[in-house]
Length: 122
Image (cartoon, rainbow, N blue to C red; front, side):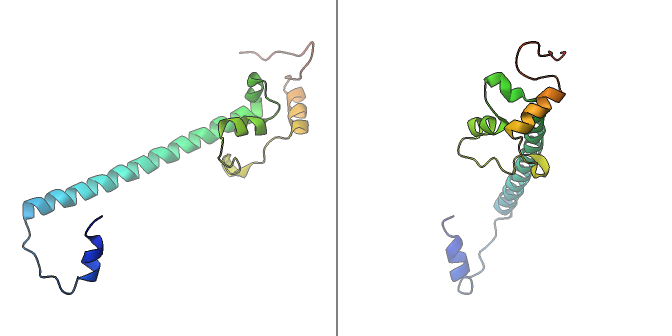
């Protein structure tokens, strides 16, 4: 970004330079290309975070975190998102499942622990 500050400070003192139209068209085109690329990347990022949110909801609802022998969805988030706040990752800021409500959901879905627990179909 060298030179940008001098454009603002010396703006009134600078003479109008002779414009190389070919170079100017190239530079302006590259600026538009970079801005377009950034916009595309932001859209891709948005799509990925929506997809991430959907998968996190499924992990929570169906208790996939139990495959990793974790005690709660909170533990799953802590393991996966080390150093990042888990709050706000889920769509609509759903609260995370507590251990008690997880057990209730597991019983309702036939996923309760212990002998004789029903196994879900594939």
